[in-house]
Length: 261
Image (cartoon, rainbow, N blue to C red; front, side):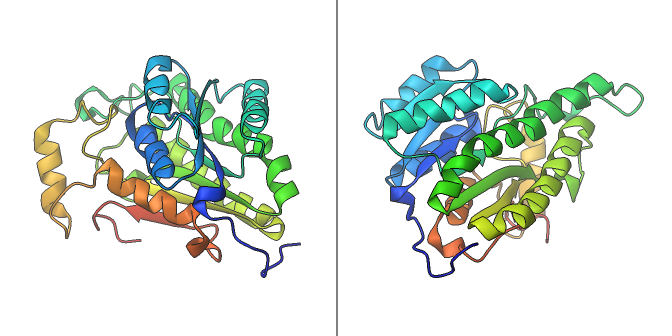
């Protein structure tokens, strides 16, 4: 059972896995953890050169490993490599990996054209990928009596201003998994939370977004600007820090106040 008096791991004492960390939002999240002194596993699928460049920023604390998060055996091997390299198990998992997707509303699949294969691709990458990483990390978390799972969501299932059916459905399922895992794993000292953003200015995925859309979103937020990847990464750090020790099963929306949770 969870011991409320057990020491909380500071970020600089953690081994953190960030999936899809070589580029886009994942790169910003990985860099935020490195800036706080954590040891970080930079997972990538195709972006080997970008991952190596990120490792070069903190070579003593960063490790790049290529693995498809949809492949449970590859994920288990990745965590074993990380433990052998750092001498400690991964106890913080950030599920950020996203199947190929571009936030271009003009090119999205409309209801009449939507194919189940597109939904399946997103469910496999988002939900199956998260399940694989959590299951692979559980032995190390249980051995430590402590763990943090942080899933990356979206505000689109609360405010589907652009109906990206496949992407949004997968992220909504991930929120459900976040809450059920929080209930299941809480007695072991493991928290599971989600951080949900809107359109970010700018990542690889949002690069296809027309400038007029960025301007419209900025005008609709109380802060009158579009959230940056660096600002989003700050919220991820909160859920990994001791400050969040009593928070689990939650979805924090980080979008400048566009969506009120």
